[in-house]
Image (cartoon, rainbow, N blue to C red; front, side, top):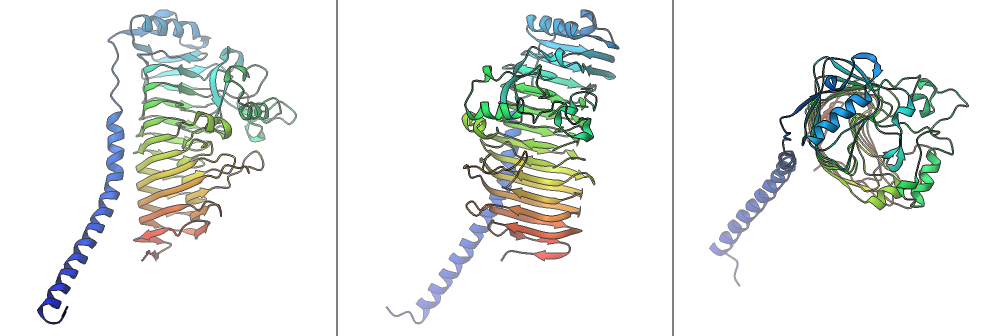
Length: 478
């Protein structure tokens, strides 16, 4: 066929039009992909319904509670909750004043409400948290001291108000069990790493010992959680303040449809994570303040064999409009991550403290295994971090060597529209595995100032940059 003359010109025009159209489609596809990620976040938020409760109110004072900060009001609070439950649900009110109590166990269709000026002081006597209940410790289930606030297999529950929950944990109680001298531990006294504590629990997990036979509590040194909805649907925690926690603060485990909103966590004890969704899905953490002794938010999914047996990934989690101050990390995934984490959306947050180690952190190893995928971070203002803006570590180690046969995977981690004033030691710190490279990490419109080392990246696909600067240097992937 003769390609000369008008036919050739026509062919070239058609090819050009195809190229322009194809390029436009590819460009639109990218824009749609970036936009749709947070459209999915909005759908998750919309799926978490507003809770409604019957119009019944039960004031704990009417059941004998005394606000002197010394009288133990456990029975009065329990009676108020039972009366509310028998009436079909409603609001249990803790009015202004200081009320000492042991653990509070919530029931379905009840809103535990703290009025302005209310402070709930939790007993520091470990025996008050017996009998043991089905709970967890660092990603492994067991029978242990009751969490300070606990709900097991309940539906439609809330903790709301403007008051304070004070765990009263200190160097004189609970905290010394962590084994660190700065938290009151005295060498030679019992602590959580003794053979009868965590090593015993680890062995039970590996041997698939039934949870009912993993009995700890009195005589052991495993601290209780602060608030733990366990296997609950439709949970609201709103407005209240938590302080002086024995251990992790807000821990929804095996829950669905959880909203944590307007909550303040100011608690600087050992392992005082702010909010740790575990084996949970459809979680919205909004307008909260975290000032903690450990990770501000840590998304988890079980430790080692326990996590693999349960096999429930944490997924569909939205964090927005939060203020992260002190902590090991702003938003963290791991290290108890054996069942995996996916579909995490973080936007419109502030992270700033000389005692905030990292902004976004992912931590696992070959004992934990698991996966992290589809993490979207957008519009974050970082004032100062100590170590790194993004840290991905697949060699995380605690309690000694952490090597096993369960290769983790990390992929699809996207950061965009982020401003960092003081980036700490590293802008980007990634340590993947030779057998499992970190995949598809992107930085779009990210600007990091005053970091010592812009990047330290091992065993990872090249980070993809678009309109990104670190220490004033432009990074752009062609």
